Length: 121
Image (cartoon, rainbow, N blue to C red; front, top):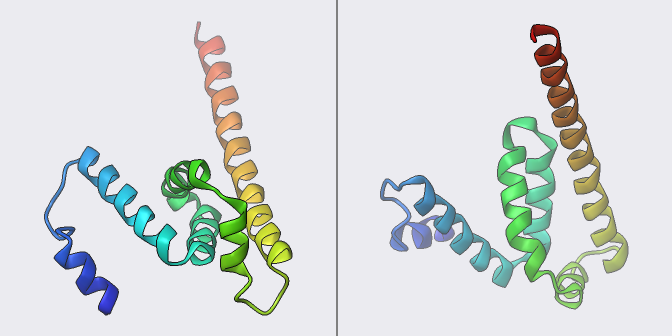
């Protein structure tokens, strides 16, 4: 509840345009990167697992990857029980598996649309 109140005070409760929504997401990513990088990567992996949320996950990845400093992420993962390197590797591999599935699906749709265009022409 504490974080929700902080978000409300930050002006996130107002209706926004699409570009403003992207800016809000960037602000949220900045705050989450400062707080808990491990949790953010796990959230991205879980969002990427569902087709409906894969676009959001890809947007978040595009915001996180340029800021990726492996030492900071490893330090954030060290607080857990397992080895930090193994845990980070597991999360990133899980993200990549789902990304491949989404890209393959998109590629199939694209090939199908080209086939339909070829038949119709």
